[in-house]
Image (cartoon, rainbow, N blue to C red; front, side, top):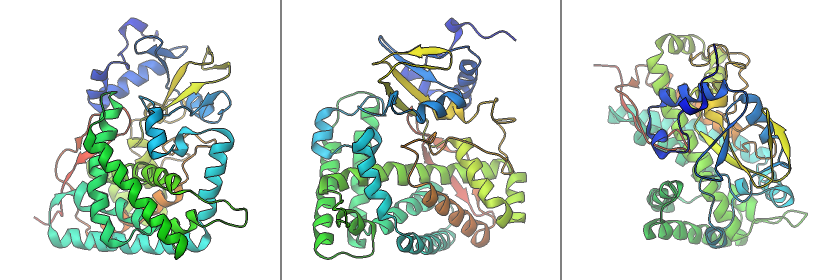
Length: 408
């Protein structure tokens, strides 16, 4: 079958493309994968779409040629935003990125991880029990959001009295993030929400430097034997990153998971038949199939040949994880939802390299704990209608998902 003419391809640079139904986007990605080289989109100079699994993986593992700075989102963060709120690790390269990642990695001590695992199970059981008691509603707000946000707050050591206010400000800041993705003017309410979050994290950092406890904030702001610790501004930027990498992505994966298990009852029955055998595979397949983060951007800093094209310094490329995770060269029947898929080398946590997700272990813990609690404490739970998806070129966001307990 001949490859489609480039003139017949969907325009990934057109905002209208990202408002299309997900299945139509996947068809467009498949057409792009059939071509002999990447395609450029957007107004000049534009950006190049990397859609094949091998290309996305290779670019992810080649930071000397494909850099994360000045930013991995579209549009890139403005310099004034970095100065005001601090730069995120995802937008850094080289020694600066390595230093921050080393501090964060050291903070995840075996003791902290063990306590977190127990806390995750307890939170999952409590949230599911409350959802059963309260009855049918919106799975995102009643279960998925509460799980993801609560786990991050527990991990960081955010005091309970602060959490409701943080949640409100996260909602306010999400307006800032969502509008910024479209390249429009940032509203004052979003700025105020982000500034308030930054102020709050600075206050907590000062408190934990004086009186450290067994939580992640204390570990991050207390200097170790090498003198490494996060500043208050760095802590604020890290917490903002967690709100996306640790809250939004996991919340969306949990919601997609219930939706997928409802629409594929044979896969759900398989999982229920032997959770110990199939839970790990179910988590990986949910992440592959839903791909919570659709794309990240890289900037070419050194000439490199990839995917049949020579890339030159200054050019922009977009790593389309949503396409790579459906690459028929890597995955048999890639559109199928199959919790027994093995191997499953999906790129849902990134393509490897220095920016591979630090929270992989925690995300897997959360998903396994919550679905275990659902299957044992609410065995009849199911999606009661179609998920309301939010248009985005960045994340595969679920705005709402009605659920019932299957008892009617």
